[in-house]
Amino acid sequence: MNTHSANAPERSLPLEQARRLILKQLDELGLRANLRTLGADILCVQASLLTADSKEAARGAGKGLLAAAEVGALYEALEHYLSDNLPPASFHRQPFSYFASHPHFASDDAVNLLVQKQQGSIVCRTYRSLVDDQPFSYPLALTCPRYNEFPLQDDPTDLRALRRYSSNNGTAIGASYDEALLHALNESIERDALSVFLLNHFYYQRPHSLRRIDPSQLSPDARAYWRELSLQLKGEVILLDISSEFCATTCLAFINSPCAMPTVYGTGTSLTPNHAAWRALTELAQLKRLEAEPPLHAYLLNAQRHLAQFPRLLRCLQFNTDHLLGQPVEWVNLQGSPQPMPLSEQIAHLVKDLAKHGLVSGVCTLFKSHLGTALVNVVVPGLERFFLVSTGNIVVPHRRGRDLCGSPEAVAV
Image (cartoon, rainbow, N blue to C red; front, side, top):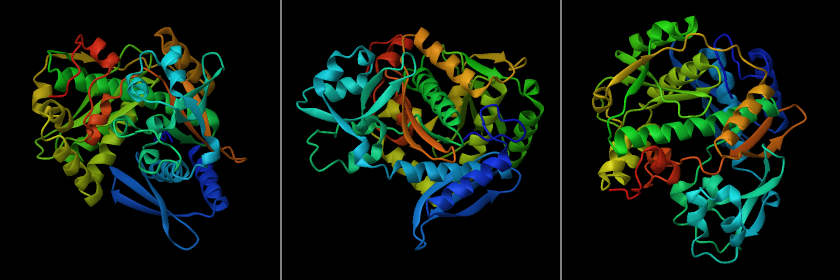
């Protein structure tokens, strides 16, 4: 769920109303929440959802200032709970020939990897095209990593090669359907932009200018947060514009300081550029608070071990800031950010822009309650999945990444 200190251009309800709604939603599902705050002014909130017998059912984390971080953590925890408890009745099967002949998947290398040498059918969800409202199927194994570990007993599909490209990217929850859908679309665009950035700067290591954002041009609350973040983390916070060809702005934030572990960074995407910067800054703060915690620390060490024999992939994971800041710099600013549009207009704008670039977005509603809470999954076949290298997965650039970086090469060495 999108949360902001003062103005959230992607939120459908005022913060306090959203808090009341999520607490009521949890109560109706028989869940209660425990909140844990890490840090002070620059903080992260963790939420644990407990069942009636006090067993932990899911966790989530929230970012931003305290009230917003608490609400965000509650919504994310519910997103994880619902995503792990979807009924098999919502699935169906499609023959592999469906994907081989469907125009939506011509440039989706992950789907093509699944289709190769397979016979029979694949378990899918149904998506509604946001371009023409027509239904289409998409493989569950690519959007639900948990399914790869616990497939249906009668599913004979060989999912081993697919696991490394499976991601819950584009799964988002909101206090309303439009809020969830907008968040999911922005996240899909964000991960694509991050993928291309990692390919350009670390995988291919070709000279590529950094579009560095002048902090003095940020909105007052983002500028104040940037300043406080620099003080508390004892390093210079670097904010970049890593936007691709799409109309939304994608920002990336990191600390310019030596680090023995893989560098953590924050990203954010929005049609409101200053909000994209805000989201990147608050996500950086969240991850810097969490990296000292055992789960994330162990996760980063494990990812590093998985990629130890693949130098180019390891560079992408480690995110060496000295190498990055040795690139030519182009200073940009986010001044003159457009006024936020209604959520439905933002959605229409993103969908139209993706379609203009030959990409069809589709949505599957995973949960919707009478209170308005909604969980959706968005897929945009053809967007780049290379960002999964940051999870320690041994991945190669797909067609879009290779084309944008001007290389036919796809071997991870």
